[in-house]
Length: 109
Image (cartoon, rainbow, N blue to C red; front, side):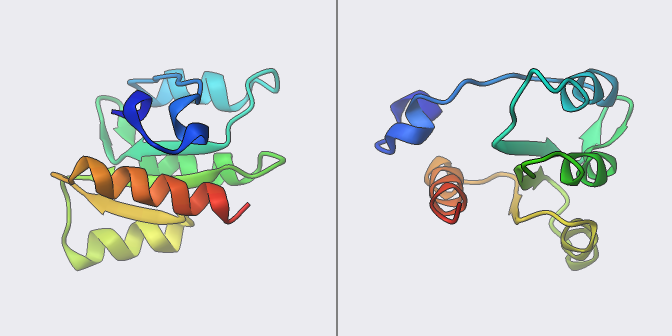
């Protein structure tokens, strides 16, 4: 989906996937891996993606953080925003919603 974006910055992005908190932490703490935007799922096999927000926020420069979750109740959204995410998308979402969110966040830099 990202490769078909009309926004060149999104289309040309390098993507790295981490399916567990442990794998994500390895990437987050590796200074050789720049992170511009992090897409976090809340329910991972070994914990919550929300636990990564504080660690991501400590990076310099701080990446933009988008939380993607099937949990769309108000308390879940509030928890993600209070944790420090920049955007929140509930699943299922339309592909254009994600593309628009990414374009907005990237343009704000």
